[in-house]
Image 1 (tube, rainbow, N blue to C red):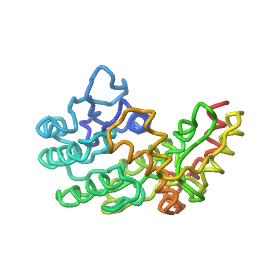
Image 2 (image 1 turned 90 degrees about the vertical axis):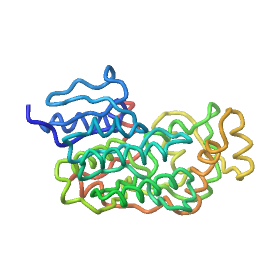
Image 3 (image 1 turned 120 degrees about the horizontal axis):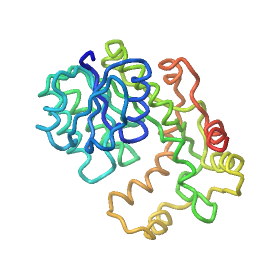
Length: 282
């Protein structure tokens, strides 16, 4: 087979796996960077290499000969930023020319959503690396909206009447695959990936009610109430901050901008929450 020049991380998860399948369907050779080779999807014209994000030398070895990498952000953890930096350093040492990174909308040092601060720091480290970069700044995933519903049918959080332009992981994967097949056109660009509309949490609850055929409502907690109610789960402080700031970031207006980037990159309109729920139940 033709040696691959593209590598995809996170291929054992939904996003990276969807990108890998799209590239395979297009006949594009690729290398999957995974932690467990036994879990890697079996796809044509595909190599598998094992490396963990935080292992700079392992990443360097796994990416030898690769020009473009899809870097799917690592799982949330207290060490995620260090892992991201180690991966970028390993990629640069391997001679990678371009990294496409799944970041977050409104990423900034002072972002209301606390995890978006790590995304911004990752972006800045990548800019300093000497490699070309493309940032996919995703809104919250609409796929996860049903998971925000409590056992009692209530979504609780301090989101107020703020809006979020939630986006499907399917559309993010399609956008990433399109970029990887023609990366030069997208070097130095940042794309905000959103759904077709910006919704309040009350509107999201109503759409979930219709799509899931159950009564779902939204309760606007105070910030103090939000921290107290989440003590039902034993978690570190940074995780509580992330959970609560999911909602306060919506309240702040940082998540409300609707972008045309998904359609521009993929050639099709982005999926709405209602459409997504219809595909799940159908």
